Image (cartoon, helix red, strand yellow):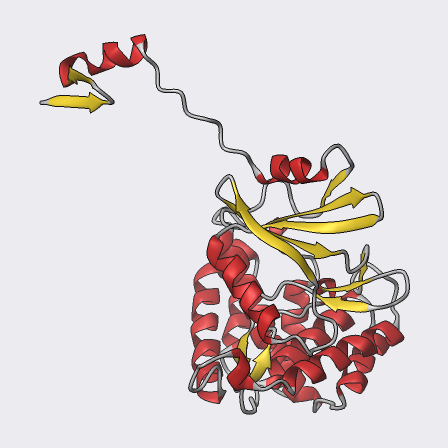
Length: 315
């Protein structure tokens, strides 16, 4: 058997010697940071995501230019870019959406350049009910968007889906609880929590946590990271934001989210949603970080999971 390289044919028994004599020269693949520096053309670059993220994760940078800053996002996969661009293209009239300046592919890296929505986010700022109220207003406008213009899904995430996925999530949490430092009795109590009420699916972000609402110096708010947008119950987004804002900033800001949205939760219903969101966060941590241990779990996550379980069952 022979191996062909260009016009030269060499026996496989001699292939090793051939490679030593004529080594193949492969151009080193450019990484996301190098590509960001290429676009910066000598100006400053600030990495906003972890320099060693999980496989398939995005890399985000702030680039300084003559007339201000821009955000450069290198996607972990091309599907992430497609999903986010689809959401942004389909929702042009929703306030607080990121503004895309350009997009492309370089060195097999799929990327997009955005206007810089701000150097702050709701999580990094002191409790600010006025800013939090704007996040609720953005969600309300999003949920009024026409579903048919966004997705051709016949159903989306509905009450039945939520009930099934809650049980599945808690079963997976039971498997990982030892690594995460979650007591067995807490998982058992969570399994007795009824599924939260879920309304008819609407266009939803699905992960609008406090740090996804970026804020500029003038107080304008932009909701970023639209790769997982889909049709889901409005309660999903509203509970996720209310919980995250309250957890990271304070109760006044959490109430302001609901005021901006124009709706409140009955406390036990909100806690049922928090049980679901907290269980998802714990499972996600265990499945994305195979070496995860209790020290890797955010300090307030398990106590908050415990509090929500007690609130959901009326204790």
